[in-house]
Image (cartoon, rainbow, N blue to C red; front, side, top):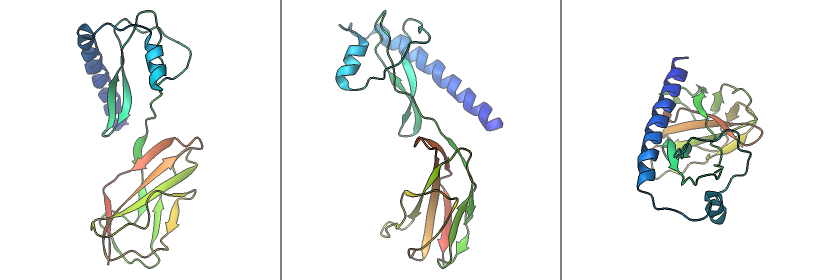
Length: 186
């Protein structure tokens, strides 16, 4: 519950900062000809839809997904034109890994990865990344419908990091596990 409050607070701060930057940024932007929808259509970045709420004048920054998670995106707004932006797919970081636990020392024989089922998940993708850069991983974005996987390819001795992502039936990412869960093959 506390993390939800922090997340909501974070979005409010990002929105406030973004809207302030948008207003300041529009004062110096050059005048454009044609509609925003026309220029978006030419670049291939157009989303069609029905205008539900007319935005306030000068408001044109929306949350998007970026390299480090959530970032903002700037759009040029033209008076009396509606701009449709691509929907942003947000996901949670609360998928729980059960086995092996962080810091565990395990044998490669009979090793089974396990995680908690995630609500509304249709399938999962897991990856195992070796800490040693010269070792390649036999498991990257392996798709499966269950919540466990018996390792059937050899893993060399060493430390590995593993992560699981949950997806719904529309192929939208719902959640991911922490990306710093490491275990050691002895």
